[in-house]
Image (cartoon, rainbow, N blue to C red; front, side, top):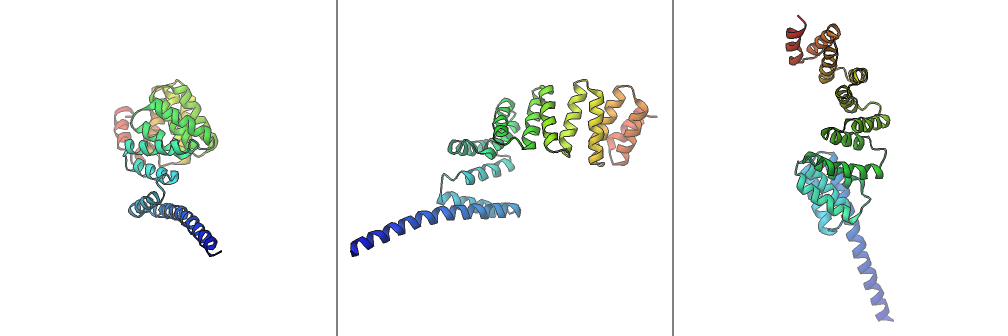
Length: 238
């Protein structure tokens, strides 16, 4: 009887140890998230190192580490970490999204688009995935598809200023002058301090023959602090 009790005690102890190890990894990971939100990267990295020491195949900790490398512009190291995460869990949205961002930074636009495609399949409500995929497509000069992605991003977030600005730029390149003007004006409505939008709007207007209106927009941009606008006023509006 004593022997049986001893065996049961050992089993309970072993089970408890494994449970404790898993909980400790999760606790370290949670602490890392808190420290990251507090902008304490050193403490966050220390927590993640501990989490991976306890559980080396912890996908969330590996993904966090990948994202830290992405933030620090260590794109190749980040990709290796995201690769590990995806091998462990091929439904991990953040890993596909993060790897796509890294590939885009390394100018691997086809690879980035492929990963953004997967990320969007996993989370079709993530506006930034559509926006970033649009940027990659834009670099590949696939403007119609890029504009469609920006349409989707704006549908998901109707105050997405960067999406309106990029769509205005590519609409203008694609010959949709009225659409470009409308989007530039939307950017200015959402953020009156967005000087690049004034410049884009003025440029589009001037190129399409509306010099008077373009000069008025440039004056507003100059008032907002744009040195380039001041120079253009002296050249084009006097």
